[in-house]
Image 1 (cartoon, rainbow, N blue to C red):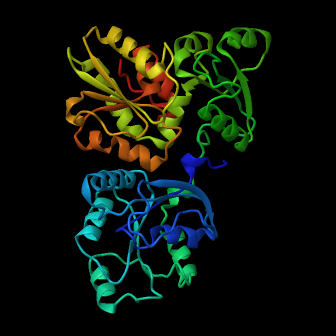
Image 2 (spheres, rainbow, N blue to C red; image 1 turned 60 degrees about the horizontal axis):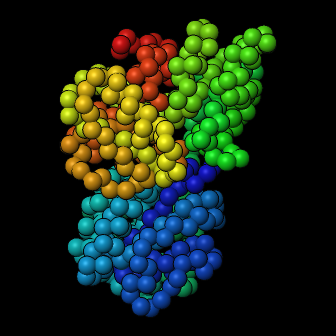
Image 3 (cartoon, rainbow, N blue to C red; image 1 turned 90 degrees about the vertical axis):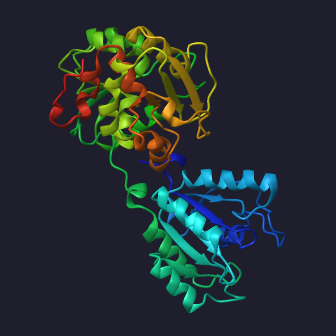
Length: 408
């Protein structure tokens, strides 16, 4: 499957001001991508660049502001740098002149909290080399990947790139098939894709594109149609699909139209199984039935988009959930990777979108605060299926041996 930005390794470059973070980006890529200056604090905000690193391939490099930035504006930049940690698959911690103090320790603690692998780079080795004592101290702390480097002379560039290849988690590169455990050669998959006010002009949405490509990669047949054509198609042809994947918004219609012996799920549930914490979603979804008056529900959108008058996350799910529970509920929506406006403990339930525009690591970190506090989490598609009484059928394709659990 071709990797979009959401599937490329995200590598963050962290460190104090003026240690040469931007110069390292230019050195690795062989291009003048990042602004380099002798003036400390040139990089003011995180800058993302999709680039090609030799021997690694497409990556997203994130150049961050100095962790030791000063003043009110500096504090804001430091906070932004800390937020970026949650978005990366690998961290590069840059230092120079054998200076390792509370700023580096602070970053290493943050990396550890979020289970981010780290490469420590002692830059500007053309001026001063890494001391044996500091290397030993770092190794004693458990950090074995330490590179002496020069962004000017490219000293140890080959070793640096090899360390990157070795340190990027394997699951960032090697992605399982979306549907490979379900499909066999020649199977027919029917994709129901509404073309409505929320559909992008002239395009279909990313999960639908990904599903089509995965179906083809599994040597199967993809048939794509709108929800209004499903009944006509089934009546006029003798084709019976192995699997039907629908937009969650038309789950009820799809359930009524598709024969019960045909597997049915949604694009959102497909993504929940592919990159979300599916086990936690399975456990958390039935918590919808236990919501009480004045409970607060958090809806997480992992992208920013035009909000329509009948938006799935902001309008439909809150309406359906309120009707289903019969309770007075309060809903907050947070888009992208923005900070929450409330403490996570304020919420009785967290509902995450499919997450097609973020990496698996970003999705994991987005939900970590909730799972750490034992707050139930679910996914847009799984929540909708539960609310509409077709949960067991919708999760069936992804439950081992299709063993449904009677949640309802």
